[in-house]
Image 1 (cartoon, rainbow, N blue to C red):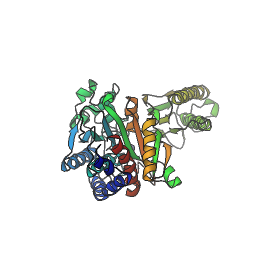
Image 2 (cartoon, protein in one colour):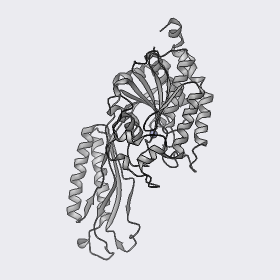
Image 3 (cartoon, rainbow, N blue to C red):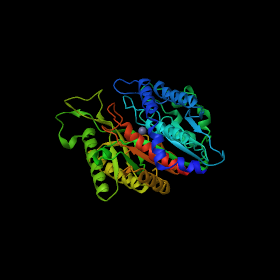
Image 4 (cartoon, helix red, strand yellow):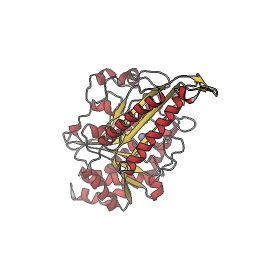
Length: 433
Ligand SMILES: [Zn+2]
């Protein structure tokens, strides 16, 4: 780096250059929200109108700024500040541009816009990066739509599992492959596992994301540095089959599927409590948990029960152990209550370890910038985990956010967002020099 470049990248200069981006950042978030209404909240449906709008806005921003804009076979969008050496391993930043139905404006989008802020900051400082610096608008991270994790990132990395392209959207039944094609992708090439992103060419994948729990609000801190992204196993459509009976049927004759579901939930909750007490953080969610509305009623013993299950943890061994304990618990319930569990399709995602060297670098950048942070395990799944599973060094920054996410009340302060951008820009500016 030149002497001028070195002084331009002093901590204070970086912080000032990030702060100077505020006006367009606020405008871009506002335009994004206005273009993806989901009363209440916003809806950027995966490979649908809302997500397509987010990508068009990103393309428009990139072109207006004279940056290189491109897409891949999964219709992910890349906005790039080209580096001096096209062969040097690139820095990828970004996150997803889809949302859950009636979600908030910041989940996902914050990471894409943070990448744009870093790029503008480098330009404002006159830094000519050694390698390409790219922000990626990732498709299809929210698995609520197709019930498949990390569709966009895994398609780009050539790691989307077999059968995923045949998944159907839960609301309108559209098939994933034709939906990808309709948004400008090429599902045929994804099916062939064509790899758009070669992990060996990526120096780092860096994802800024709002925190989805209130840990930062509780601690009074603006930003956290992620210590790991959990992996999961999931059963989206599990059922318990017993027998419908008259409400007066004595207990010993019953094969009550709802009671079996209740016992299952309590056993899983106990496993969770024990694992955490032993020092292994994890989470269990029975997102759907219900009797069959077509036949249930006040005077009928439920003979069928449906649920979805998501179990997540930070270590592969913990996931394995918990699933084994769960299956043993199920076998016991089946015998005691004379019901059958039909777990249905199993899905899973690998644990996403963060890169310790990059994490240390981000901690040093935060300290240099005087921004207080804390280490935090991600409570949620993120595209970073798909990159980590493919061998890319990853790191994440979480931004304080009130009222959780996946709801219209998501609330991220732009000051906190810019604090995360400052840490990221500080790290990138030094790394690409
Ligand atoms: Zn997200």
